[in-house]
Image (cartoon, rainbow over all chains, first blue to last red; front, top):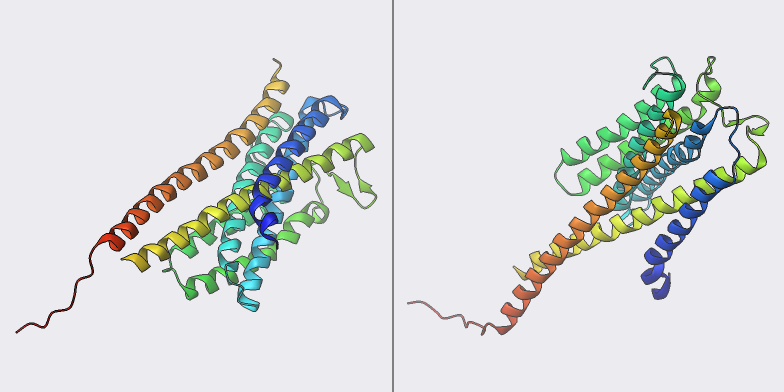
Length: 228
Length: 59
């Protein structure tokens, strides 16, 4: 990677995230039509992209964990940790935004009989436990290896959570995509795609920001040890 | 504002507040790192300015 792109990646990503988020909000409120669900359908344009982003973060964390175990990539453990940390934050947002939508639509904050909800909660809690495991061990290769193995196990839960809506026999949760493709009008799908891109770019920006801080922290610790 | 509008606004507000809180926490961390860097710079300068002590045999 060239020095220019390394130095300017974060500002460029932040600018792109800002532009895409502004564009998605404009499309959601001024372009996408209000369908039979009413105005609360506008929640979908943030809730689903946030859930996709959480899956992407967990998947990226798993990929980096694999790179750590397989290729012993330097820094892969830290990258895996940061991705999972962000995935948990986006997981919280998925659960909160979904609950607010459900409260209005179903009259309940949570429905335990709904597979999609429960499986997402299982996935979310699995990754919350990642931090308990990580911080119960002293820093070093053992912690990095065990965390990587745990992160990889979690990846198996992602397709189960994504496909739960199709595997379920009872449908309460709305279905955005079925076998025939997107279950929405063209303008809604365009808005949805921009919202997904915006959320992924926001996550990429935050990922690089947190990673830069963590790397700086590690280097400062090494410098302190060298000086003392 | 209708109830439906309040729910929609709540969702967008929650997302905004959580992401802002995240950036705020990262900002606090960067401030701490800046302080640490200043301390280490001071330590490095002090080490450089201190005259080297020669080892002297005792006894």
